[in-house]
Length: 71
Image 1 (tube, rainbow, N blue to C red):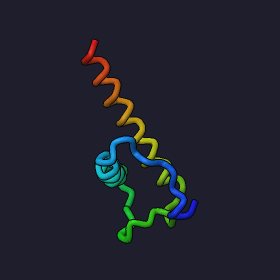
Image 2 (cartoon, rainbow, N blue to C red):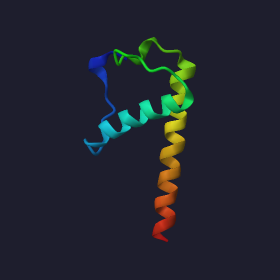
Image 3 (cartoon, rainbow, N blue to C red):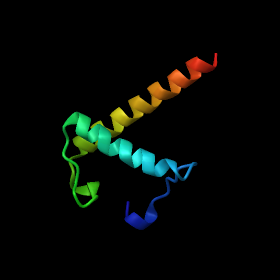
């Protein structure tokens, strides 16, 4: 998808920066070198998928902890 066609917008606009920071944090935890120019399109699909999968796991764990605290 081209840069101008991005449709996924965070509900909370300030969350975009935090999610971007999380992406770099997870990549460093996995030992995946991040692109210096910020363009992730030249990376292997396996690497970007691993980053996305770990981000999802972290966000689900965080949500589960928050829901457990509400009960």
